[in-house]
Length: 95
Image 1 (cartoon, helix red, strand yellow):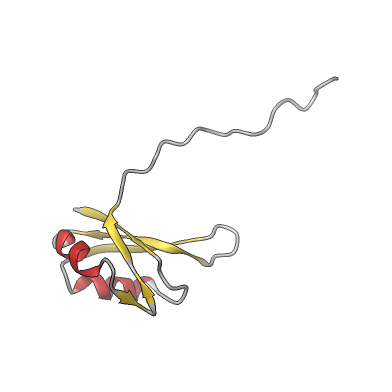
Image 2 (cartoon, rainbow, N blue to C red):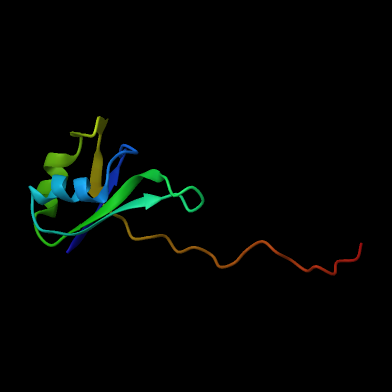
């Protein structure tokens, strides 16, 4: 199974329409559009997991138009390790 990054999505694109677009090239396991945590609005990119046909989908979908936007499609890179927590500090600082 391969995970594909799909960028430059229209704010009107749904997970169902993304699935349908990629299903023409192979078996889609899942399609997720990343949403802003605060507003719930699309962030303009998503991921499609394909059981087969991923290489064909990259070749044929990259640079094509979906919902009025030209897609960027490539194999997703592993998520970068992010540091924990951050911020904060002691509350009882005395200067």
